[in-house]
Picture 1 (tube, rainbow, N blue to C red):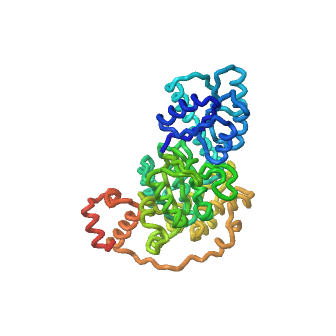
Picture 2: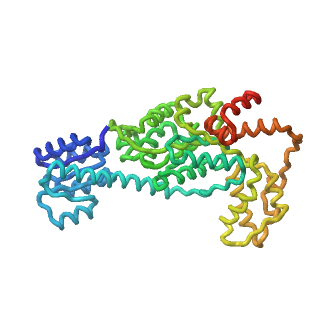
Picture 3: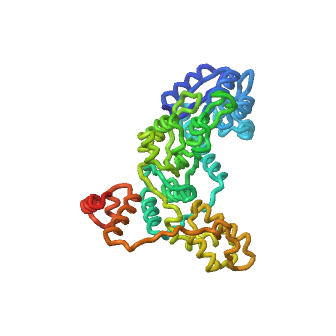
Length: 442
């Protein structure tokens, strides 16, 4: 473990030794070079967080080394050193990409103070890059609509766990809003203003998984033409959303498990250990219990990511939310138009089973607004699969009170992460809940 990898280039050997000792004793990992050419070659092979470069050197001066280093390793933060300080050279250095400029001689205390300030800037820069990546990712539906009792319980639980760092696993069919819920948890946490990085685990080839998550250095493998920071490191101090987490290959489950236990990792091709601070939220549309029984998901990996489980019901099981969802999406996409929905249209939307869930519903509303030229949405604008949909004919006999109670307890147990939480939601003691579970075979 170290606070950062630091490259030092100075043609005065005594100064190199002094700086190397200062950095090592303060927890950094320095590599020192008196030959700038050799230092640049080293920088092609390994990633350095910081670089301290002397201005007056041969055969290359510090500004020339700076320019070349910025090509080979653009993410390295550079500070120039010189005993011949001047405003002109400082301005030129900063214009060419240096972060700062210091004048020799300096004491150990002065130097380490500068290093601490520069490494803080470097880390903040990495954090901002993570936020920039987040802004580049377009997403819709960032607000949650919850009028259904089950959904309200899920949101309540989400708010309760938001400010802890306990990992959350969100289960649910495609289109039920798993990422929306993950963003809701992030926004209600102390990490709200830090990066939220989504990783679609099903879209990454197995041979690139480790590099995508942890990053790599130049030359680590074929086509690794430059250093790359991994997606996990981009999220430092923020939240990582592992979408379709059950699709992670078992070989990578082992490596990711090791990271989740310590928050420490090495980039591919590098032996330096890095430590970050992130919160993990995962999601899957698979049957996790079946994947566990077949060994598709490792038990230890599952228990590490499923500190709290939240299961989003499909839209067909919460059709009472359709009016509220309709109002929300109409408001979002109507661009201020006063749009009404015909009664026949409302009935067809309510009857349809929505296999694509909220995502499908949102797209249908967008379609309706495109075709609606008046101020009322007519059923003729609906897709044919909704117009021609025939509900399954099922009979629902009146249930006895004990049957209703059994179903309600079963629903609460699906949402609650512990028996204590379930008993609190139900308004009964844990002992009473235990008896009722035994009575109803739950």
